[in-house]
Length: 279
Ligand SMILES: Nc1ncnc2c1ncn2[C@@H]1O[C@H](COP(=O)(O)OP(=O)(O)O)[C@@H](O)[C@H]1O
Ligand SMILES: [Mg+2]
Image (cartoon, rainbow, N blue to C red):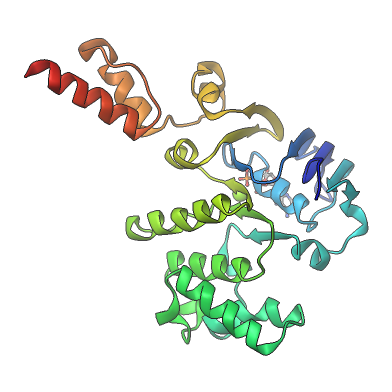
């Protein structure tokens, strides 16, 4: 059992080849097993770049990344991928096989697992992600939301302890967004560590226990979710949209005496309280 951080990013700098400026500046944080972290920030802030550093696709230009105390610079991407599952922002960068089924079993075959276990795991994740009916379909013919779920399935099949998810809900319709987030929540409840990049602040308040804000390659906030949304200066400078519940409760603050809140259940409690006062 590890007692220290699962992942540690220490003073990481990153510059793309041929660029004169760093994309990431002095980024440091540690991840404890079982956390659900959301990484937010404007387009071009460096979120995807940071995620790619965590799984070794890019390597730091300065600083270090440690996994259970071991510097990952000595590990190949394949070795890291057995510990950290990664969902690409664009599913077209993840899906190469002829069918959804092949997609899910690909990495499992590479891991050298017995055929029976490969099939069990593939069936389990396809079921879990609501994709059994698409198992013989070619990924390129699927909708963006379906592709994303196929990519999620292929990552989940690896059964890694850590999941780095780059905008997992992009392209999901409402009917799939909730089930997908329910899957991620269930995995977190079962002990998996989630590091999720998202633009959706409603997801941040509903699911994450910690939120990081990256602006211009610098980590501007790393802490609990409520302290981010009371930091008006940072919210404005990082162009973060407030969660719907907070906007609504703030809009009703002056006119109806609501207390600004972040969760739907808190808002419902306040509404019911007022309804009871009237009767
Ligand atoms: N392969 C690349 N080569 C050079 N610059 C890149 C590359 N990928 C991303 N960038 C640049 O790095 C910055 C951060 O990009 P990215 O990490 O994709 O941001 P985010 O995910 O927050 O939108 C942007 O300015 C982007 O143009
Ligand atoms: Mg990105």
